[in-house]
Image (cartoon, rainbow, N blue to C red; front, side, top):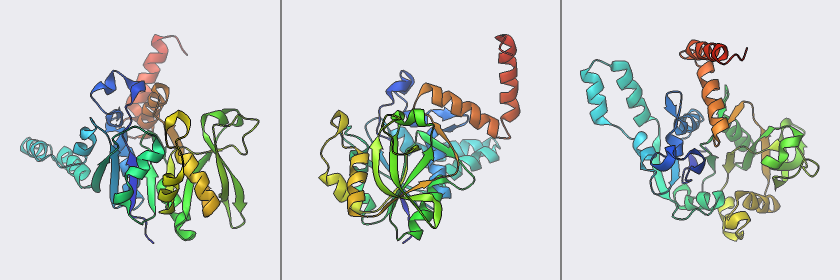
Length: 295
């Protein structure tokens, strides 16, 4: 069965970026010349996703507006003969079909995904966390979709290798590697932020999932967990006890833009990797190194 839908939770308050996020959704903060959410949506589109479901909250209207058509702006650009800019703007509005649902209470990632249940229906679907950006030749969501489709549309968790001493920052998966696929495990469980000595592996979950419809029943069964929230980790562990769940080590470079440090790192890296901005960023870095006697 073709995986057509992706859920992108965007209901968080973005408090780490205050005061910038007092009026602007965190997901709309730019990485070079595109907002963070644009990269997540591009990944979905390039993975073959046909419908995006944003799980939103009050004050997030700018995200939906960004992916809508802006006829007034398009007309202005055309009138001023800025055709290339106009075409870029038009492409954004035509990227993918977008729908949204409100998460009226902030009760965790599991709760956010469950809010999309009525729009997802009985389909296997993707989940993309917008503050985890991944640069790769093959979109990471596409990589996970391929694993799911090879395994009867089962759930697949994207994982990456992290230094053993940092396992207490992530959800860590445990499982057995498949004989026919050295990068894919049949999961036993996911352990939330284990200490290095207790971590079953060093395979961490950075925010990419393929989930089948059974996850919704699991989300209904789990109690509130840490922080009084419904944890997706708890639902995935329950799903592991009922059905096959796979974890796949994806190929690509992941950037955590959920913190100031990660956001700054992503901005520099994305600028350096884009041929249009590489020289500009290199010159800025050189000048700053001289100014501050750093090299």
